[in-house]
Image 1 (cartoon, rainbow, N blue to C red):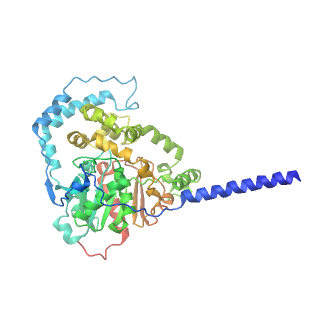
Image 2: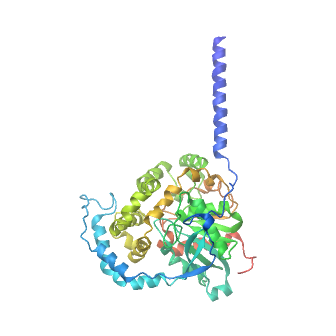
Image 3: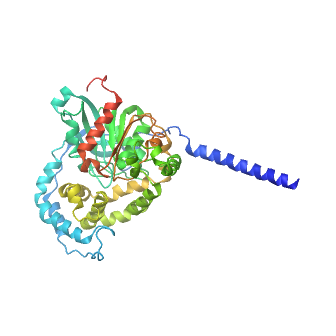
Length: 468
C-alpha cells in the first residue's frame, strides 16, 4: 500500500513538473502583443517644456577647417609607443601594431594630403539636417535620376547603417539605387541618416535612447520628408532598428530587408539547438549548413569576437574617453573590426582591409568618427540596448505583418533560419544565401546587395501602385 502511495506521489509530482514546464514554455515562446509606444519623446538638451520645434530642413555641407586637419596630422606625427606583437602573431591578439604603424603613416602622409578630394566625395551626395524630437538629424537624401523616374517604379527607401560604420558605407550602393538600370524595374529615393549619436547627428542627452527610440526618430524623419510608406534596408544596428520600426509602425513600412537576420527569443534559441541535430531538414540546401550550425560553434565565435560589445554595453564612457583622446587608438579599435569582418581566410592577412574594402573607404569612415567626436555617443547605444527598459519591450517576440527579406552573407554573424525567422516575420517573402561576403555588405559587395534587395522588392508585387 505504501509503495502505491509513494508511486502515486511520484507520478503526481512528475505530472505537476511537466505541467508547470509546459506553462512556462508556452509563456516564454508565445508571441506578445505590440506594446504602446510614445512617438514624440523629447531627447534634446534642456527641458521639453521649453522646447520650440523647428521643422525646417537645412542643407548640409562638410567643411572641415584646415586647422583641424593640421591638428590631426600633428597628432599622427607623434612618436608611437606601441608594443611589438608576439613572435608569429598576426591579428590573433587584436590589431597588429606593425600594421597599425603602416596605417598611421599612410593616413598622415598620403590620405590627409588629399583631404580636399575626400571631402569633395562626401559632398557629392545631397545632405541635409532637420530637427526631430529635439535632435538635429543628418541625412543623405538622393532622389532618382530623371531617366529612372520616367521608366521605373519609384519608392522611398530608408537606408540604415550600424557600428562601427557610417553613411560612408553606402557611397557605392546609393547610385545603384537611384539611377536607371536595365536589370530591375525599380528605382529608389534614398534617405540614409547618420544614426542618433553617430556622425553628424546629435546624440541623446539623457539615458534610455534604445533601438526602439531610434526607430521612432527614423520613422519621424521619413514622415517629415513626406514619406508615409517606405522600404527599409539595414545591416548591423540598422537591421535591428529596421526590425523595431517594422514592428512598432508596420503601417509605414512597405517592406523590410535585412543583411543581418538575427532573433534572440527563447523559441528561436531552442529551435537553433534542435536544428543543430537535423540541419538539412530546415535549410533549402546542405550547402548552407555552415551559415547556421553547429550552434555552439557559432556561439563560441561570437564570444571570441564580442569583447567590444561587453565593454560598450557596460562602460561606454570609459572606452569612449580613450578613443576620443587618441586618433591612433581610435584607428586601432575600428580597424580591428574591419579586419575581423573580411573573411576567415584573410583576417590574419596584412592586406585584408585593402583587398576587401579599399583603404580610402575605411579611412573615410574612420574620419567620420574622428571629425564628429562620436566614439563615446555611438558606444552608449550598446548600453541602452541591454538595459531593462529595452529588454522589457521584448520586441523580438512581437510579430510584424510587414513583408520581410533576408540576405545571408557567408562570413557575417550567424543568422537564424527561415524556420526561426517566421516566428517574428510570418510574411517572410524573400530568403537568400550567399557563399561569400561578410558584415559590411554595402561596402564590400554593393552590387550583390542591390540585386538581392531589388529581387525582394519584386516579390512583394507592387506594380499596381502609382509611381511617385
